Length: 185
Length: 185
DNA sequence: GTCTATATGCCGATAGAC
DNA sequence: GTCTATCGGCATATAGAC
Image 1 (spheres, each protein chain N blue to C red):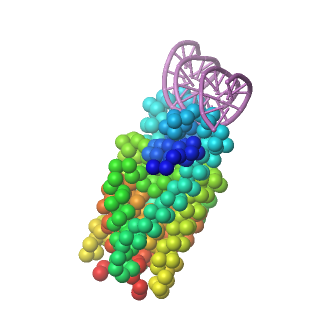
Image 2 (tube, helix red, strand yellow):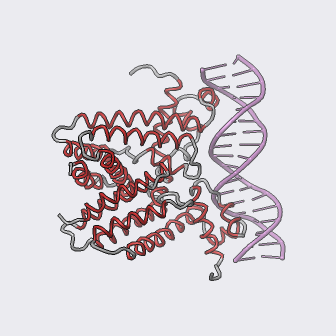
Image 3 (cartoon, each protein chain N blue to C red):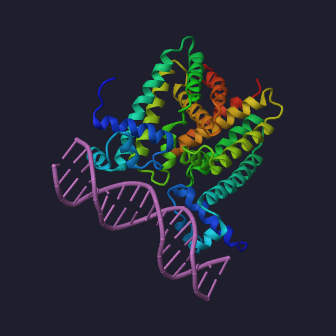
């Protein structure tokens, strides 16, 4: 493993703690401790907690989009089958112990009262990027934009239910509908 | 309007503040003030904040399920059209100023680190009740259980995206896929 | 860049009078 | 049942030494 800069160590600690317990519930002191430093050192690298949370969301955005691309690249067959397979692979990861749903929906919920919060805007931007990517993957579909939105919507709803009930079966059940949404009609 | 008991006044204040700003972000003092009382009076009626938040979720559960039934009862035509119409009516309400997404998904996100929190369990129970109701509405469908789950999943995903982007269009786009999920195949 | 120590404020919760 | 007053704790953030 490559040596981490202090800033990277802070972001690693933030990612684990914020994702596991929620950004609002985790104090900067806990993040600093997990990163092996103290509070003032953290504040040297990040202006305030809002900036730290926003950096966390942006980093997650890059990471999640890359993971989705990778999962999709592993699938084979006609497009509707690949979409369904993508859902099932997401379901696999939802069965891991540390899985806690969609970080972006959770950030949006935690900052529901602050629609202009930069972390929330970053979450929104990420979802748009995923939507654009999905629409690209659907090139050739007679209404790729509509289908892309529907499939993304379905995926996020399935993740939300899987998280709420701790049951990845919702994602697998959604996979079947996603397949038909991806089929040209 | 009927006279409110103090407990009802507290729950009314809690509902507005928790839904507008988030349960974690709103202090009990703000709830008490909005209810026209002080903190110790609130603590006379609720043991602690967890009990207050849980009561809020349970009240919302009853209210939302009743609203869904009412919206659905207003629709007409064959079942798939009624489902699509239900989505569009939810989209209408999502365009109201005070709309802030699904309170249950938001509670689940706020208490992500406490899977056994009673408010989270109440949110989970509510979603199950909606799922059961939807499956009842789909009686006659060759795989009502699967379709019910898919439609509910789609609805929640659409609400989540509408909330994240402040764009109810996601719910209207989802309506079309919900229609085909409700169609017997 | 990182530390020890601390300022400052808010939050949940309670004591005790009425 | 509701109040005034307050406790103890934890949160974000900073001062100042090294």
